[in-house]
Length: 377
Image 1 (tube, one colour):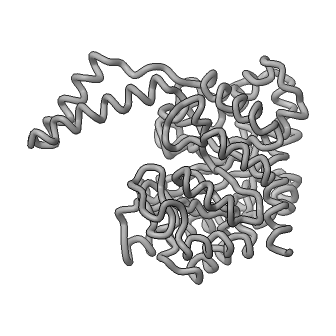
Image 2: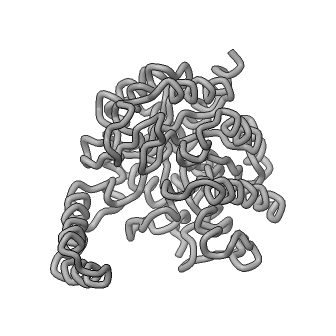
């Protein structure tokens, strides 16, 4: 179902098409269709299979999408390298298969040119520093293939940077980790601090001479999930001219949902610790969920995060990083064609057209350009 926004929001997203910082569609296509776009054709609507396709991106007012190249941290060796490169190839194949709908963007100017042509700009982000295999040359290759951000960690430490969901290792960044940040600056790639520990966020801010970037995170003050950004770091992001792209994942949005999720995981852990088989743990979790329904989370929670980010950092430092196709989204914004519903909610709260333009597009373009300028310098 496509949302029908008010005239103000509809015209806004026509004039200033959204730049979304994070979407996992490409890894889902790899897992479900072996990167076969004949089997899973994104030029037609794919509800029930994907949260994203080219039809619904257009309906949602999206002008540019960062596609996430992601592999699980548990994957190693040839499987990790192959899976990563297959996703790069898949993104490039999208441009070849659907040239009337989308084109690869390498710069902020490319985004604007592609949008003027009536097409969606495709950008590439690599979600997890483990995918560079401990090599700056691999990082440089990813840049040649079109990557324009690197998320320093995913759910596990890399050995040179700490994840927010792992034990303390380097305590921030190692010497090699600092070299990675410097190389990203030299290449003109965004330093993405989503998934990193708070200490790694601070360490990267100490090193980077370009604006730092969170591709899909929320505000820790609003929801105390480790994936969210604490206020002291937000103030530092503002001082660098950086941006936090607000995420839609319910456990990052709502403190109530976060606590429910912690309790749910503890039920599974208790059964597992007792030595019961996995099927028993599944049954115990199902029974617990029946007695403890998941709390609601949705657009009002996204608005709370966005407005906290705006109030603390200023409206110039906030964007949208949905994480569609990498999560179970809120029921009131279930797919990419529902972005206008969020902008309707902000419009109704008194956001000006100028500030909504910044949120949708202008802030991300500025950070991209500032990062390109830092590389040229």
